[in-house]
Length: 322
Image (cartoon, one colour):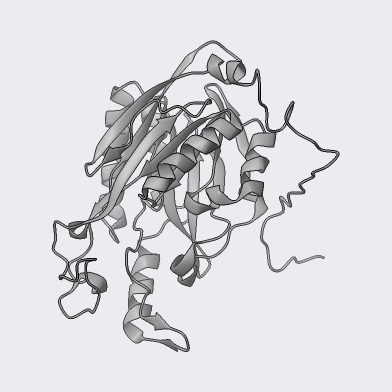
């Protein structure tokens, strides 16, 4: 383990929801700011390009779908990112221009399906890792497909071994073990969870995996959505927790982004209720030091008792053979 320090930046910001072009402009600007701040790795939240569809089930109920929901699904699809695409090239150019590793949470479109995906770009703009969320949570399953094992990777870079899991798939022990086995050192956890329990979970994972955990969330307001977004219109039945109608300044997601060290300590404190870039300097040698008394896939493993098999094949439905 090289005795160096790596500066990372967790960008706690909201996209311009359902507007891919303006969200890309915001991403480019914030990446430049993070690089100016000395970051070598810049991390954006889950679904930053270009919406986490807060409080909307796209007008679906069991046994019925409504035309308005189909229209909004089309708008969601139109604001998603295909890989490859000119939009993906803009992200790559931001990484290349500023000589940073750049991970972005995107809504990826492939065929007619949307996926919640984290994409890691290298300093040269090449895609190093593309991970689709294995299991969308709760109502997310209405609009997002399921990922496959081909995205459960860890990539070696000049700043360390980087891997990622998205939001509540971090609660899947087998998925975490797959990253630990590959030697993850900088574990990226983009999320939409602002519950207080999330902070404890991230500290647990850092201590369990003996790795740095960078968790990054959006700080999102009603005003980050289009004026005609159904849940926040006056005629919609959705209301704030106190029963009142939604107002433009109301906060939907409070953030809570922070960085944890390999003994579970907080290197930075969670940031709430504001957009900002959180910087952290990671002393990489502390990973080795932390493994004196615990290594989940080494000294504290029992492969004679427990085994895990990971299918890394892509989730392809049809294979054509000549």
